[in-house]
Image: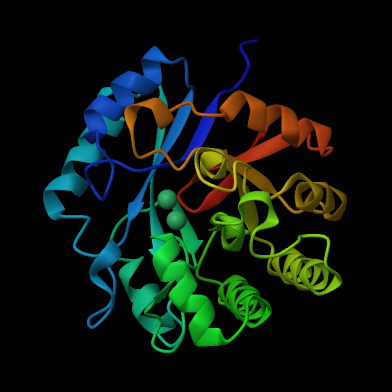
Amino acid sequence: MKKPLINHHVHTTGSDGKLSPEDTIKLAIEKGLNFICFTDHYPCPDGFDKWFCGFHSEEYYANVMGLKQKYKDRIDISFGAEVNWFLGHEDWIKKEVKKRKYDYILGAAHHLGRPSHLSINNSEKNWNETIKHFGSIEELIKEYYTQVRLMAKSGLFDCIAHFDLVKVWNEDSKYFSEDEKWYRQEVIKTLETIKESGICIEINTSGRRKKSRDEHPSFWILEETGKMKIPLTIGSDSHNPSDIDYGLERAMELAKKADYSDILIFKERKPIQVKI
Ligand SMILES: [Zn+2]
Ligand SMILES: [Zn+2]
């Protein structure tokens, strides 16, 4: 049987991706993928940072629904959304994700602070401003993982996006060392919460294209999730044509090395196991 090649994290012109949904599908077929899930950024509630807002039009939705049918004999397509975690807006999220027939809701903490205007990953300049706001890198990271735990416990999401996003600028451990005890404790505590909540995490290969030059999560964390039997999916967080299959085979190998024999895909918000 052909090896599964799954990309569960794909952006298109439905948000900040470069390719239209149809061109994305054609490219995925050409690259030999068997499954993709559209996870375009969902709009934000009123009054929030405009960085990830204004996406998911009605036309986009109708288009993707049509394409799912059109290409169903050539590639398996799920329809999802990457939804920002904004503490205090849980009811808003709950209402929004029921508006359409989603297969998958990916939760992401890209911002911190109250209200959540402090960015983690949009630029290193903003990252440094966020550190300044919290007073130290340790305080910032502790707040990040606190938010990830709240996100996991909220029951709103199927998966946590790019689990250790706080390492995105951490080239050569420039900001912190993952070996520090406080860091490891935060990570483990957060994994325990994710395990209890029953949701999954993703291997997100985009970190290899960024300063961190490493997947999210780091391999030592993946080994922990393997031991804890936290379910897993794989995605490239694709925004450009070259991202569509970026690092997917390597991610599959990492999953196996961390003792996974299957990963998940989602349909109608329900997980389906796929042997790897
Ligand atoms: Zn994201
Ligand atoms: Zn994304």
